[in-house]
Image 1: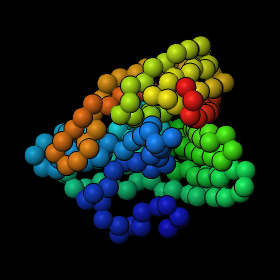
Image 2: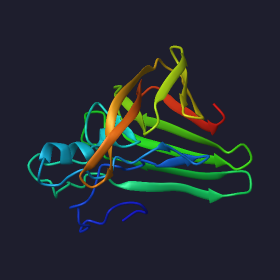
Image 3: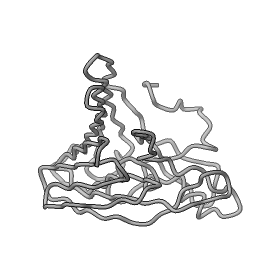
Length: 219
């Protein structure tokens, strides 16, 4: 299998739909977090919510899961997606990762999610670039989510850009098409069986655009 892809026989009992998701701490603050595992069989609906695509810091296309989650099987995830590592480089001025997956290829336009993550050691800034390409001319909606234990405040917003503060960290987003921005209250599991409040910044785009987000300390 390609780097980053689960093997065909990989166990899925504890797998989540977190392909190309990331966790990010900046200046000692948890900016982007994983939802954790709240429960197993005591509440299957909650079990599936915490392992869903929407619960992770990645892209969701047309409201669909990256990999199918059988609703009544809390220890099964159907591996539909294959991941390709396209670039990984470490330099003095930039650390860079480019990867993509085809978890949404069963949808009509066969969309593919590509994510580029880069870090500038001098400015201590992270850049996250997301795009969704399709084989057809059809467009699809995609939503990028950032989950944080720190309250998220959108301080400016236009049709194609936004700025948000997450504690002492600033997040700036830019696209070449209209964006729909929202902040919602959520929850994450700090340990098994215990959840605490969190906040989700959702940015909705379409497949004719790419979204670039710059995250850096000093809000």
